[in-house]
Length: 96
Image 1 (tube, helix red, strand yellow):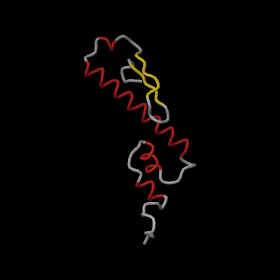
Image 2 (cartoon, rainbow, N blue to C red):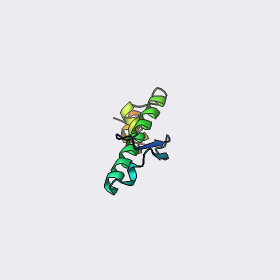
Image 3 (spheres, rainbow, N blue to C red):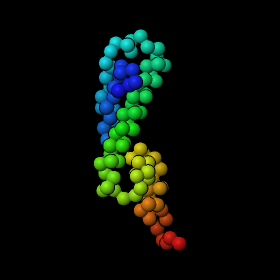
Image 4 (cartoon, rainbow, N blue to C red):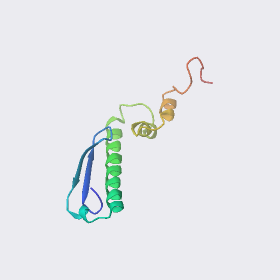
């Protein structure tokens, strides 16, 4: 839900938008930049909340640190996660 309660968004576990609702007709009088900022903000916060829910749900089941798992969930660089698992070295190059 946006801070002014005019728009809300729902996302799935992949971070894809599944619902976008306008709760008042205020959006009709908002400047385009203001409306865009409100929509982007509410989607970003919905994604962050879902990321946390996924991390909490699978945290005890998945290896690695909470931070490295969260980075992978966000679609970011998996190198820290792979290092947590001991998989950061190329095959045939033992760790020293």
